[in-house]
Length: 203
Image (cartoon, rainbow, N blue to C red; front, side):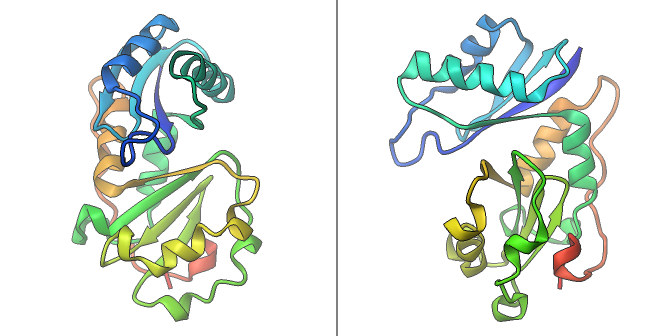
């Protein structure tokens, strides 16, 4: 059995697309998954499954949610090993930052750096971003809501054709812990030094 996290996009925001976590847990259990738990109200669930097909698991969950709640919700499903590896590869000194200052955006597919070619990192300092394995790291010292860089990174010209959903560092670490194999712990928060922005690290 493999532990997975389901990352739902755009639910329970300002009263829109309400998906109660208790009902999400019930739904995942009805789909035959085990060890079902949720974290916060923003669409984070973990479960175990014998399947090794993340895309199939995500598609199944999307179909079940739309049937149950009457609206579509994009979902990403990632196993615990992937979540731990992405967290460990963070190019920013996470241990020195507040959780709300650091975010990871997860994508449904690999993202080419060319998508971000028109974004000048120097224009957004001290904010910074870097690319990883189907992921983008964002350092926003004043928080996501005030981030001009986050706005630029989310433009349709950048994200066209992608399914993406973001989590702050506190949630990232919690999901790594929740999907870790029994008897293991989450990887330590990275203290990697800054490096160039377009190769998956900070400017």
